[in-house]
Every structure is written in structure tokens, then in C-alpha cells.
Image (cartoon, rainbow, N blue to C red; front, side):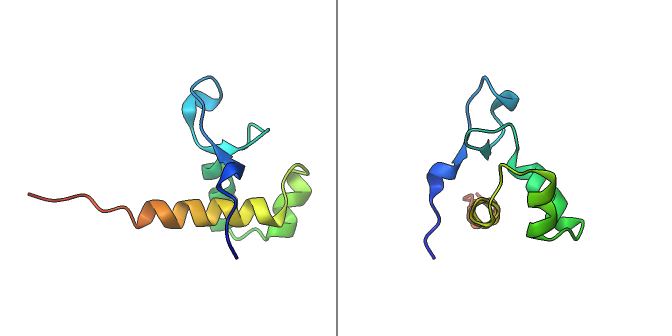
Length: 74
């Protein structure tokens, strides 16, 4: 499944530039926190009706991509 990266946006005027779900003020970190606490996608969607499973998957994929980032160490 290919993630639609247009789902995740970051603009300086909303949430101080934190990555968030497009069209909302729901940050990627908030969704990841809910998942880390053991909430299911269905529970999160019940709390935030603007979300979909696809948007939650996009948050996870975004976090995975960031964790793959490598920095050259001198």
C-alpha cells in the first residue's frame, strides 16, 4: 500500500509547524501517542471523527520514514 504523503503537512502558522493531518489541527505526534498508549484505530477515530484508518497509517508511515533517516557521523 502506497501512502499518500499529501495527508501529512507542516505549516509554520498551524501548531508551530508540527507535522499534522491536512485540514485538521491533529498532530502526527498526538496520533502516535494514542497508538503507543494502546488505543486502536477505531478508538482514535471515535475520538477524532476527521480521521480515517488511512490517515492513521500515514502517521505511522511518516514516523517510520523519519526513523530511517541517517546522519553522517564524523
